[in-house]
Length: 288
Image 1 (tube, rainbow, N blue to C red):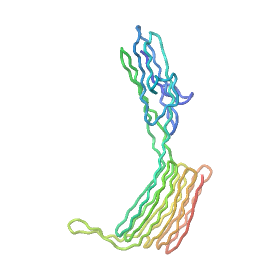
Image 2: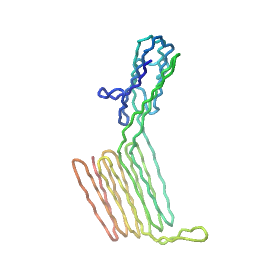
Image 3: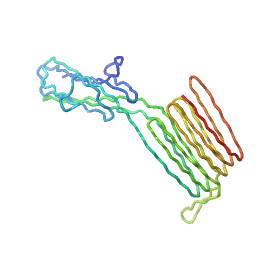
Image 4: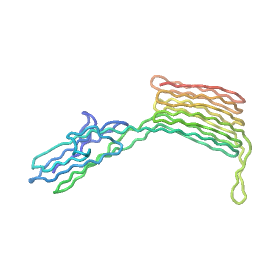
């Protein structure tokens, strides 16, 4: 009995080697079976076990009626061979989320959030079972899927005193949008510890908002440091074709605005620094 399980992606791929595919890509699986024994093989059945992240596009020959993964071959005489070709495609993954919230109070604050459209590499696993009255054999192929380098939206806030913030986040598979307001005043505070102990904090406020396209090396970065008072509202949007960050702020401390874009066609970096008491209104966009 000869049984091989060979995946390939396109005519230029060598049979017998798993190919690396892109997200939402196609894989062609070839199942070759044959009888190299001196007697007939009876009740031969071939059954596929597909990866749940894949959907079948075509199969030649078609599977048994009412199924999409079973082929009943029956009797296979000595020297007879056959082949099954199955074309599959990754199911497109869509994600939608709407998140909103607010918080207010007085004490010590350390907030960090990061949202990204990146997708890590993973494996698509396909298995086949070939069984008959005489024996049973199995084959397995794991095909690597390339990672997607996308966009990132993040913010962080840190300090002690009075604090209030509110945010609304809209997340889609390839883009994100956030509206956020933040208000803080520096005052000394203390955290109660067990056994009647406490630890004091008197920390200035710092905050950062970052829009980044990791694939193209572009970013818009807004930072505030050592602020005794910080009020800011802003909107941020990241997608595959552009980054956008706009804000209005009133603060006593330091603010740093940075824009960078590093691609084959351009290499640019812009920075603005403000130290003191200011009211600022800024808007920045980086296009593809």
